[in-house]
Length: 253
Ligand SMILES: C[S@@+](CC[C@H](N)C(=O)[O-])C[C@H]1O[C@@H](n2cnc3c(N)ncnc32)[C@H](O)[C@@H]1O
Image (cartoon, rainbow, N blue to C red; front, side, top):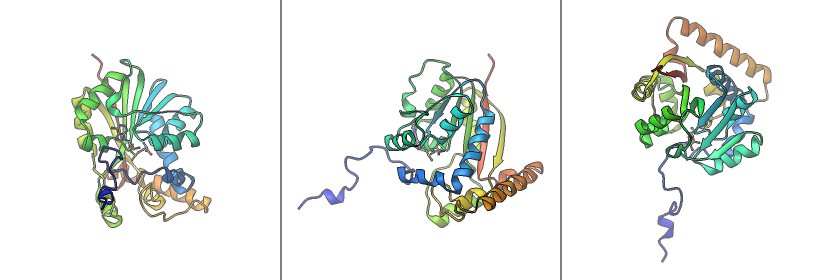
């Protein structure tokens, strides 16, 4: 009689997004080996941040916002998913985490010295108006934009196929183009994370290395960094790294 079962998502979020897997329960992965991989990514971003104030757009559970706070920055994280922000506030009571969409960046011009996008740009690239979004970012960023995102190289794409994970991509070349169109100047692109990341499962893959063997985890992270440094030295990092980090600065006018 009722048709309601034909519309299981009626009344839910009006956006169609590729991060429906990004549920509050996934925050538990931060307690496993992925937590260590994530921490290392956060530290890479922290080393690229300039100034004092930072806005982390699409912050999810806010692990990066919290990391930046602990490093002494004045960090604010925003995300459109209220459940993620709620889970993040429970995990990190001291972090400044707020529910807001990238379309509503109603901050005064040059409010933040640095704006960071960690695993966020591919969503807005695919689902939103990337040009107008980056113009807003340009307006509120005083000095720098840091983008960390999946590097669409063969192994990552194959792994996604194997686990049936569908996600849009915005590779380093596309990111560089759209960021420079908005008036930033890209100063560096670097690559990281070869096998520690896939072993951890990230937020979406099978967990191949649990947290328990602490030493094994440390050895994996050290080996991962070492191998990638060697590959980067011979300019092959871009074919092996699961993540790229792009640094772009506001052009002096
Ligand atoms: C893959 S998750 C990454 C979360 C976090 N930055 C991290 O690295 O763990 C992408 C996040 O971007 C958020 N997001 C996507 N589009 C957004 C938009 N237009 N405005 C604000 N947040 C957005 C999603 O809600 C999701 O939490």
